[in-house]
Image (cartoon, rainbow, N blue to C red; front, side, top):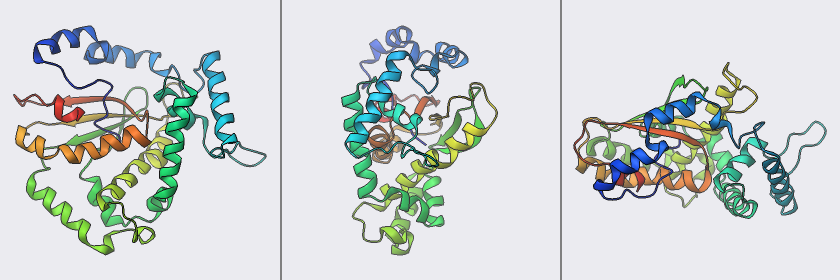
Length: 276
């Protein structure tokens, strides 16, 4: 469900945007499609590592084990974290072990402090469903590589619907029993659960379905954002709503967004809102 985390910095002046788009293949839809059709996206992923990357993965796991944050699998036991997960943190830091360790430790501490696994298992169905309608939803479809495609329609997130959604978070019964005493805002608890669904349901399911390169687990999603009919005022009012997801993805769910496509007919520039 990751969204709004882009690989570029804040947009520059409009006079530079056209040349930047032409110069950067990541901003070129044709080049992006060409890359997706090739095997280039597999670089740095499980079973497609260089010898150096294999060594970094081994070093990373050994360091995390020494620090008490990773347990290797034994006879009849699975490791505490699979290699695909460890590689997400390494790719996020360009295989810098120290950098990956810092983010991995922060994430594991955050998961423990917020009882993330218990939250996902105990969240109220009504609360989860309400949150699901406020963020990107998996369409049940995948791209040609087998990566799940999420679609986010923003037009319905007007002030009236957002007010109704926010009102559902004032009901104590809407909070998971395990998190009644949590100081974390209800909106964030729900968002945590949505990300956990991506990791624990959607990605494992897509990994099991027929696709090219079945040796490599699916660990990312593709997002399509439909901003048709959305005015600048509505977009601006949703900035905080969007940034919640962006900050969370960047900090604790690294490398879960493969690419994002924005479709709109609005005359207003929206990149500054999307990138936050």
